[in-house]
Length: 76
Image 1 (cartoon, rainbow, N blue to C red):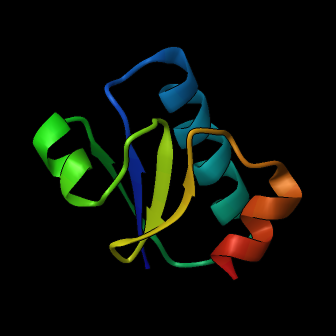
Image 2 (cartoon, rainbow, N blue to C red; image 1 turned 45 degrees about the vertical axis):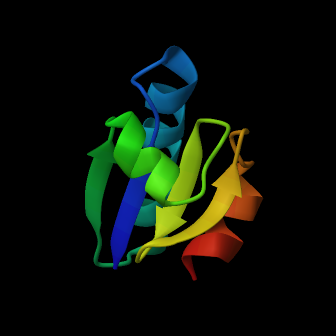
């Protein structure tokens, strides 16, 4: 599974990356974490608010940091 964090590197983007990586490890999935900071690439996903989370190139959350429970549902 490819987990993509879309954002410019702001504190919320870093927080989303940390909590997503921690949650993915907790539930024991095989994943690859990619941080996308280029604005053109972010806009190509259709994202207008960061941070955003994409799984295998599909945006699952935008403009917020999902709770741990929401992340578990997204990642399963």
